[in-house]
Image (spheres, rainbow, N blue to C red):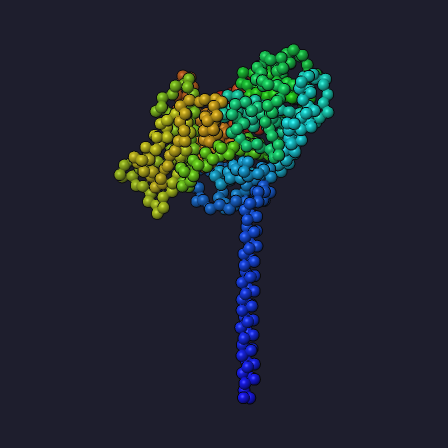
Length: 554
């Protein structure tokens, strides 16, 4: 009987402990349940939140490390590097804050194009950010733009405007390569003269590119007072005609057309000279049409030189920096570029680009062009020799490398020659050669949207190369080498009376385009002005009589 109360107490204690354990486990269960509920809400909020462009402001993409690309010769002082971190904004060249959905190429191109070792100058970056602010303040339908329109309507040199905005109107002509190099020239001119660059939407040209400037447009609006922007060199509004008529530059109208096509006259060519540029600085609306890389001529203007030398301490990279800043494939074009690359080129460890441009009037036999391409690529060690007989040993490799060859040309057959050569005889290096030609349009169709999309796609694919072979005089090749930061090997084109030496290809002196057919007066200035004028401008390798920008050490 004495143990009964003690036993009862123990029983009550056990029951209490059991209840306590039950309550603790129940509390833990509810805490876990509430935690999962909160995490679910946060996850749904994160997924549904719109993309903020500032989320990538300081981002660098981490990419799988690619194999070292040792198969192609490197330019002196131009070592490419492999990195797991790729700078999305190209060393500050690209502005931050543009929504990725509006232009995916801006954020994704670093995954496909080899990094550039040419760093933009701090002064160029500052100049670009200042230009973007200026463009935004003066873009179509802004207060400054609306205040400038009356001077365009009156076209009177005495019309005063209450705006600081001045404009460079650009209208594209001829093939896509010509249009791109002249657009980049026009943007450089706009930077130098503090003008807002606006482009004509004529045709499909503007559909190929993303808007380059944050929170603003560079398209001339549809209600622009001038409905037809196509003027000829003899038009009363052209600068050449005004020079002939006035004989002095004291009172230019508020709208002037500068004719910078290769058929310009000497009066038109005065555009490049110092006194004329000072007069044009007072013009509110300047329209330019061109088919040449006239930017090289700006380097001969002594008024522009101090600014140009601060923008580009390395003179021969101006086109490389500006085209990468300005021109990004639209999402429609970018989708085609990525699909082609991922389908055909992604397995390769390195890529050789070959661009073949045939000039119809020369009527060069197919065999002669093929021989020239093969001899050039073998001589410069851009393609490996083949093992053509059983006695010639093929290097055995535990893991064979795939080397891509991308051939771009309007005509079929050239890619097949290279492809069949390596199918019939293995590469003596032991590598596998994968040959591709994205299109074969047969003829150039200017202003056709689909044709231009294919051309712009191929220019970008060539720019992903580690080494590049181009054809003399080809603006198509100029665009690819500028985007990729590549000094190409140039296939010389035939003269009217003879074919070129089958082995004739030469390494270019810079990646800058050639200024074809510069005016006689500009050449005279270059040759008579001494080092002060012409120290960074010289003769082109690929185009007789042409001039281009290069660096002294080259």
